[in-house]
Each structure stands twice: as structure tokens, then as C-alpha cells.
Length: 184
Image (cartoon, rainbow, N blue to C red; front, side, top):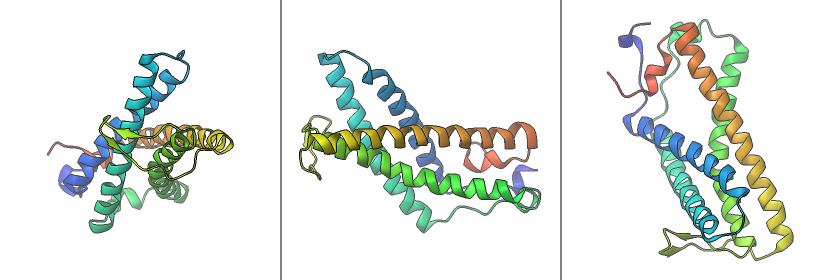
């Protein structure tokens, strides 16, 4: 497929895609790293950074969703849509819907867990964010589990998304990845 045949995403959508990709992958890696550390000032700092990154992911996700609603994504090119099996089209759409849901669920369950555990989120150490659930050890345990499960679900879907993109780039060679790229 020639690059002239590829309709690209809106530039803001492309920028937010890559910002969220970096934020989500980086914050997932930080979450894995910090969770097994012994209690220390460094661990407390990592938790603060993790919370701050989660709030930024939440904010960028809101802007990304708004951008998507105001500037819908381009349709799949006819050459791709006509050869893509129905199950792949379904997987494509289901993965995107699930990712968008998790863009919000993961940081919100983390924020709620932090609130329930009695550790408020103070963005950049300057801006205290409201607690939206009461302090409760039982609720904190449930929210921690939900946060972890949803984060691992998102990691799995991110891997599926990357695998699909690489399949289009390396196997199909259909130029589909150009829609989200930065080059010409």
C-alpha cells in the first residue's frame, strides 16, 4: 500500500497515543519494580511517582477520548478492510474499546486504593487531590486487587495491540502503522 493511500490519525491523537504508550509502559514497569521493595524512603518516592504518572495517564486519556469523539479515527483502508477476516476486525475493535476502558479503570482504581488505604494523592507533592472513597482496610484490599488485575489486563492488551501492529507492518506490509506514525 502506498503512503498516499493511508489516511492518518489527527496529529493530537497521534501525539497522545505515543505519550500514553510511554506513560502506561513506564508506569507498569515502575509498579512491578516498586511493589516488591522493602519499606524505605525510596519506595515511598516511587509510589508517589507512580501515582503522579497515573494521574497524568488519566488526564491524557480524557483528552485522548475527547479528541477521538471530536475527530473520529480514519476508517481502515479498503485494501486492508476487504482482506481482514471478520475475527480480526472484531479483535481490532474489541481491543480498542477495552484499552480505552482500562485507560480510565487502572488509574481510577489506583487512586481509589490509595484513598482507601489512607494515603492521599498529592500531585507533584504540591496539589492534594480529593479522596473519593473513605479509608477502609477491607475496601483497600479489594481495590488493590482490582488495580493489579486491571493493570495486568491492560498490559496484555497492549502486547496484543503491539503484536497486531507488527503483524500489519512485517507480515502484511500494508502500511497500516503509518496512520499512527510521525513521518511523512
